[in-house]
Length: 383
Image (cartoon, rainbow, N blue to C red; front, side, top):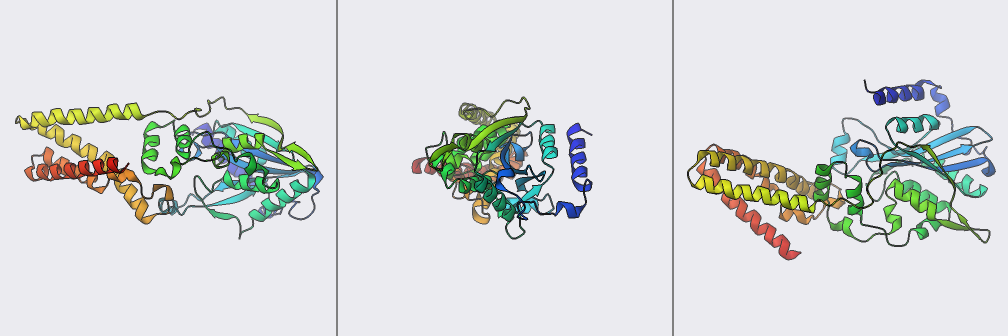
């Protein structure tokens, strides 16, 4: 068994068996009214990107520590359930996340470190009153009636929730610090963080509409944990007539030694153009070979047609279904449907039929490609 899997099991066992369940359910001292603000420390924790798709964008948490009482809690807004219904909920855009507080702060850091992810802390420079108010707000958030929220990758996630709480703690100063224009669009940030898998990056690029191409502010960019970290570093707020920095100090708990996401998004346009030219050029050559009477040319052209129909038709069909039947708003009214849609998927069975000599399939494919070409031209004209 891989060492990471072993470590995860050990941490899970420690959390499950180290103390009785009643102790885990015990409210934190600040929720019981026993903490004093001057004894509290609050940290913004940033975890670097991980190797799995769900961790490519990094993660954020908040830690509250009562030094006098010797208690800590890590508030994690990225909790969701791996059950039999998760795929259906995610497909429909109805994935519920929740916030959970755990006293196993050091163990959580070690778990992320075992996954090869950075762990960085920012100790917040807040007055005693502000720290106590923030700690109590976090405790309110974990109550059963408050803990659940409908996840949205860009607008409501594990980073935006702490961002909004921190902003409230400093009377809106964090939002004001992020009021200027962002460095890039949501799409460009997505490309940066999905660079580890170009095919997945291109697929996500295809599925999302121009909603993520609009100019955004640095506040909006803080849907990413690393951008929230940078925004907190920059923010100042007013306290007693003075401007104070929001972050008192930074601490690196674990350095994974991994390169961060690229500063600029990778450019795939040239590669995709070359691939399209190669596919189109080979189709023209195979078509000429087919018209010369070669059954090999017919078979190869049919197979290529089937592959193109499958590779483009499946995401095109998914795109239409996401628009019509799901709450993935960033996929709605996507103009890529002019270029790939359920009609494209019809090329898959028709191509296979043509490969085996069906003249009827060849005629049907001619109509399919003509309709798709007209649709694509219309899409270009509308742009």
